[in-house]
Image 1: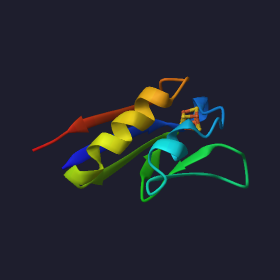
Image 2: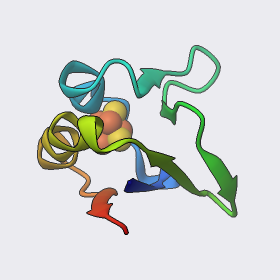
Image 3: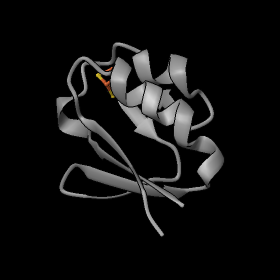
Image 4: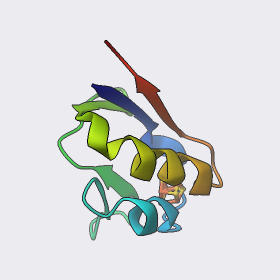
Length: 76
Ligand code: SF4
């Protein structure tokens, strides 16, 4: 499995993560920040456990993110 961790408060809505992994990220129409699809959150920090086949795309999303607020790690 792959864990994605996202600090939403610092998102600037640049769309970089959506371009890399559109099945996992989208921009909210409400506040212009990104949403981690199926993420669960507390205090602005959201996490999602996803399958291994999403690893590469979400690594690219993390690399694309100018705010450096996306972390992607493999978990057993
Ligand atoms: S790449 Fe980072 S700053 Fe840009 S929309 Fe995605 S989470 Fe927000």
